[in-house]
Length: 288
Image (tube, rainbow, N blue to C red; front, side, top):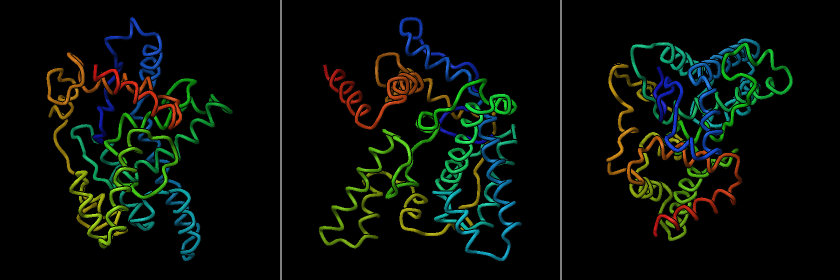
């Protein structure tokens, strides 16, 4: 199974404050209706199927294949060609279907997963609106659209693979990080530092992984980056999310998972300016 930032196998998530917060309960009801495993599977399978069809139909016409990749794989076409993307998608599908292990993704794979999910969620949501009976066949969510911005915020670690590129959704918390990184790089370049050095210095300051640095530096994916790292499904890789006394905790007795859901219910559906206002107020109150 693919290891995202949260356990995609977890059923019926709850938050301790639902009973006293109707908006939070509504948000958690929404979360409980999503079958994340099927959402990811159908997204990857759709991307793989249509990429293979494009390769077959347009074989020999590299320009048309390139045009398709630029439309369908907004992030990952920058570092992988059609054959490499097909190989990566096969690896992701096989890993996702393997229930004995967790498979961790590097930033190259997260970029590809982002592309596949982004494209499929748009298709699924259109079916929910226009042909709900067809949408139901996927078993992802009954009569309900998926909020892609919210899904990414909850299930991705960051969007470092998109640093320097405009984000197609609000992606508030990740956008703030990316803008800060981009600003740090720009400031160093304007002071006379070579861009490669500016990127390297920023990677140290913001703890950016090497694979994300390579993507930011416009380097193609390397053979060693095609590996998915696995660990037994019995290993408690998500245990830290439930720890209420960790140093990463935010409030007394609040674990990271609860904090993430609580923040999510406050940010869901907001514009960048509205989200900025909400977070500023949270920060103000936390200082008192």
